[in-house]
Every structure is written in C-alpha cells, then in structure tokens.
Amino acid sequence: MATLWSCAGCPNGESGFCRVIQENSEAKFPNEKPLWIRHVVIPAGRQFLFRRPAPPELLVLCEGWAFRFIQLPNGGRQILNFLLPGDLLSVGSVFNEDNHFAAEALTTIQVCKMQGEEVRKQLATNPAAVVALAKHCLIDLKMLDEKITILGRYSAEQWIAYLFLHLIARIKDRKVIRDESYSFPQRQRHIADALGLTPVHVSRTISAFRDQAIADLSNGVLKILNVQDLEQLGSIN
Amino acid sequence: MATLWSCAGCPNGESGFCRVIQENSEAKFPNEKPLWIRHVVIPAGRQFLFRRPAPPELLVLCEGWAFRFIQLPNGGRQILNFLLPGDLLSVGSVFNEDNHFAAEALTTIQVCKMQGEEVRKQLATNPAAVVALAKHCLIDLKMLDEKITILGRYSAEQWIAYLFLHLIARIKDRKVIRDESYSFPQRQRHIADALGLTPVHVSRTISAFRDQAIADLSNGVLKILNVQDLEQLGSIN
DNA sequence: CGGTTAATTGATGTGGGTCAAAAGCAGTGG
DNA sequence: CCACTGCTTTTGACCCACATCAATTAACCG
Image (cartoon, rainbow over all chains, first blue to last red; front, top):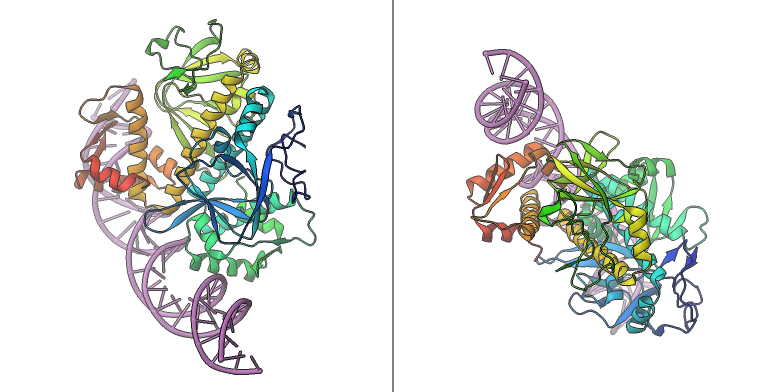
C-alpha cells in the first residue's frame, strides 16, 4: 500500500501513520520536500474544527481519536464518523472549501497542519494524484451508502455490531492486535450520537452483548468474545 | 454553470440535460467529438444496472426518473437516491470500478451510454477535469453527511418533508415550475424504501400533510401547499 | 367488467425514547 | 483517609412513533 503523500518525517510522526491517501496506484509527488507546517497537540474533548470557515491548512490526524459531527439546532449532534491516525480531516479542505461539519478530539490528539496552498499547487501538476484523491472520495461514498443502508433497515443491536466491526477493521489496519482486544476511547454517548440512539439504549444493548458473550465494552476497551455472532448481526450481506 | 462534458448532441438529448458534471470552473475537453455510443430506452420498473460487474460504458440518465438501491438479504431494499435527467449513474464507473449497488427505472427512461475508455483517456490528459470530478464527489459526500444526520435524528414526518424539499430543489434546477406543482412518479413504497419506513406509515404521514394543508402527493403529482411549514419540518437548520 | 396493484384505514404490538433514580468511578481538596 | 463533586453507566417504569397484520377502497388496464 503506497502512500500518496505523508508527513512521516515530521517531528512527532514516528508512527508513520500520516498517510493521507492510500492507493494501489503508485502516484507520488516527485519532490520530497515536506508539506507540513507543524504539529499541534489538542486535549481530549476540545472542539478544534468549526463549521463556518475553511481552515487555510490541510489537517491530518496523527495520533489519537477524533470525530466529525454536525451540530443540530435543538442541542443534539450527529457524529458522522470517527477519525483514526492517518485520516484527513476533510477531503473538501484540499480544495479550500467550507466545512459543513465540525470536529472534536476524543482523546488527546496530535494534528499535522499541511500547507494547503502548496498541496494544491502540487495536485495541479500531478493528474495521477488527483485521480487518487477522487478514488479516495469514491471509497467514502461507498462507505456512506453502506451506512445509510444500515441505518435505514437495521436495528440498534445491528447498528452497534456494525460500528464495532467497522472500527475494528480500521484499527487492525494500523495496529497489530492480540486477543481480540481493542482500545475504544469513546463513551457510550458518542456511540449514541453516531447511531442516532440514546445513551440509555446503548447501555442496554451493550449489556445484552455482554450477557450473550458476544462482546464486552468497558473501561475504554472492547473485547470481542464471539466474532461469528457479531458478524452475523453487523454485516450487510 | 458550465458543463464538463455532455451528450447534448446525441439523438434524443435535445433537452440538453446530459451534463455529467456541473462546475463553476470552466474545465472542458478540448475536442468536441461526441463521447456517447448510443441511447437506450428502458421501460418503467426494469432493473438496468446490477451489483456485480462494472459496465464497460459510462451511463448517464437523459430522460425520466430512476433510482439506485442496495438489495438486502431479507428481500427488502434501501433506495440510496433518486436520479433525474443529467445524473451520472455512478461516479465509480468513471474508473471502471464495480458497483456496490443496483439501479432501476422508475418511469420509462432514456440512458446515454458513453465510451468509458475514451472518457478515461481524456481525463488522464485533463487534470482540471479530474478536479471537477473530485469536486463532484465532494458535493455527494456533503449530501450524504446531511442525509445521515436527517435519518439519525429526525422523525418520519421530517424525513418526508426533507425528501420533498430535496427533490423539489433538484427538479427546479432543470425545469420551470408553475404553481408549486411537481411531477412525482414514485409510488409510496419507493419513498418508504428510501427512508426506511413502511408504505403504511408513509401513507399516514402524507395523509397528515394533506389534512394540515402542507403538501399533497397524489396521482404522481406533488403540490406544495405551505412552503414555510414544509421547510420548518425538513431543513437541517 | 374482472383482475391487479396502490392507497387508505383500523387494531394491536414493540423497539427504542423519556424520565428519574441509583450506583460506579474518577478527581479534588481538606 | 474520607467527604464532595461531576461524570458515566446501569436499572426500572412508563410512553410513543412506527411496524405489523388485515381488511377495505380506489385507481388502472386489458
């Protein structure tokens, strides 16, 4: 898996996870000069991206968990997705477009700020890179179609199973896992906000998973007890 | 609004609606030779795109209504969105990727088949066109984020109001409308399949709209009786 | 005119929401 | 070490939006 551009050389990026776009195609920027400006540390719980103005820099999450969300007029919020190290905050910001969402740190995070203008300049001269970017969007589109299907047709139990499986797959992608035990820093209200449930019902459903020995989420750690059952519940087909 | 490429010159395309990508940027293919192969007429109710294989051609809807959907193992289906004249069937097919969805004609439709290979060749030499394509994806991504928010947080009443407003905006974009009366060929089961409801509940909700003089959908025609109330219900903020 | 499909209406069931209280679990400060 | 505070999770009682099942009516069509 080649990385299109990365900030692997930046001060805190030793994990090498700052790949923005993962591609099979070998599109790479010809020059190797660093595109990042600086790393920023943001404490857990802090909102660091707001709806209105497009930030001049391109943000990449380098360490920790965050999430994108839309604030609702009635005080609630819909979490759009969770972000893991290596995720671009918003593909739209590549083109300097305004965000339609906000973002908040779930744990203490490190964010790498890249020079948007510089990236844009390089993209303009590198069609293959733009193609990779477009394909990156397509993956997201497919994921969202899938998510809509799940939300539209499945039950709370299945939604949570899907969320677990989905996040596990992403974590596995960047970490070696032993004994099916995953670090899961989000509170039950985050799961509720992501799936359109109440924290109360999330608690009940997760308790049911525990009782049925399917999965156990407590103290920020998710343990998968029965993969088959979980997949039975949470896979599209 | 410039069109990136179009089949406006093709036999049945006199409506000029076969714009695939609408952009403010003036990206255009340099040569004007037609990219389309031929037009195909498909009767209402026929499924014309299947999940597995990527069709070699690029499909553009030129006339009529269609919809994309995902078939569920239990026999149900989730409608992902409705397609109007000018819509590209799948952005993914530009890159010859497999579909994760299927598509069906809602009315009798006309589809323009473009030479995928030729389009791809032209894209390779035209970075601005790829950028336009990527931006097109971004619009879709934003729309899907919005849809997830609506589905996650709102009620059936609000979903239907949103769907009405959303489709009306798209119809208005391509037709002159008199007296807030729109052609709406989908049956109540399509609305149900799009929103994750049962036809029964859709019927009740639409009846309630009629009773409250908000909107009236019958015989394939949607009449908006009170825009304010509808927007109150169906807008994100 | 009968046959088919869509829309409506009614009766009843249930998944998940709402409200409220309790219990677990930091962190903080005396 | 304990009391105090704030946050999260759990649990219980009750409610409602929407599903399910079933029957009736309306629209369409050869």
